[in-house]
Amino acid sequence: MQYRYIDGNNNVWDINKKRIAYKPISRAQSSSGTYSGGEPFQTKITADQYRTIRSLLRNAMSNTAIHLSNRLMGSGTIIELTVEDTQAATCYLPMNSPEKAAIENWLNPLKK
Image 1 (tube, helix red, strand yellow):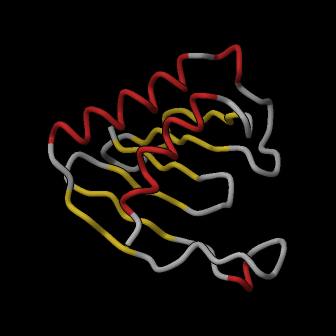
Image 2 (cartoon, one colour):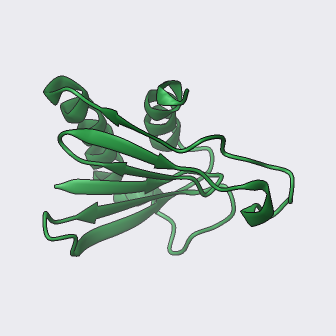
Image 3 (cartoon, helix red, strand yellow):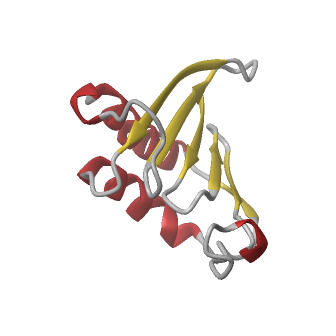
């Protein structure tokens, strides 16, 4: 499985077994006109790192009690993709959920 995580600021994280690619939004794309997600990057990850982030994503996806019915400002989005890039599942996480915080706390230190 591959995953796309869209954080509360609308930055996109593409995650697969071998790498994580970060695609930030620019000031011009942000709703405030002032926020920038920084610089895009791609980094290789180990099998252990992939298992960890996949576990965090799956944990959030399995906790359907917290899922939002649509994307709200500040919420997180998880999109599960098959190897063929076919969307398999999507869920929206509330802004202040522990699951969203755990995912972003794991991903954010990867930023350069």
